[in-house]
Amino acid sequence: MRKSLQLQAEMTEEFGACVFDVTFDCEDGAPVGGEAEHAALVVALVSLASDKARVAVRVHPVDHPAFEQDIATIAGKAGKRLCHVMIPKVESVQDIERACKALDAAGAPGLPVHALIESPAAVHRAFDIAAHSRVQSLSFGLMDFVSAHGGAIPSQGMGIDGQFTHPLVVRAKLEIASACHAHGKVPSHGVVTEFKDTKALGRAARKAALEFGFTRMWSIHPDQIRPILEAFAPSAHEIDTATKITAAAAQADWAPISFEGKLEDRASYRYYWQVLERAHRTGRKLPQEAQGWFEPPRH
Image (cartoon, rainbow, N blue to C red):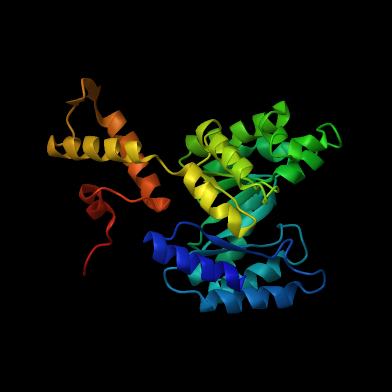
């Protein structure tokens, strides 16, 4: 956990922006019987993070005996330093409501919630879950999703190729991405466990971004971070085009313009601005003209 914070600080310095979140894990990271001690460790580490750090925590599911304790300890003592709380095994909006009530009681009423979708029933309710005002993002839990099918999906469905080809897994991913985009939330693709093969990881990340509509992706190893950033970042040509069109649109007071013989209007302006936002979030170098759009306000 300390190494992840150090790597985040180093890459923030390198890219000029915080390009990934660090999520401390209480669900799988805490030893059985040691949940309280692990939660206390998370609080201690969060307190050491810099003001520029983006640190989150994955707590236990809402029906786990340690859930209330996780929230009371971590959100109660370090909630103001967290960027969000990840709730695993979310099955319904009621689970989100329970989590929000616990956060409110712990003194963290404004803390965003990320939901981990890991079952067929949860996928069925993804649109309702994404619609909740406190939910900021939905993530896909591949391995639990496959296991929830009682052997109906072969083990290959958890692999780097099978998770993009098995129809039930593909359907789940598309439902989650679609639910997020319908409600203005962030769809976050799940992990790829083959972390030693960075080229295969890069292909999987590009497929998640370009074909499945995800805008973020989880990593489980430091070596995965740069390939994921590269896959989700727009190309230099896309950034240059987006900058030119956005600048021309602003000069025209956002009226329709002709750019390289093609009509551009407010619909495409939104798209190209999103390209620039994505470039900034992934630490890409922006043209001089666009850099000022993302500089923090001076006081």
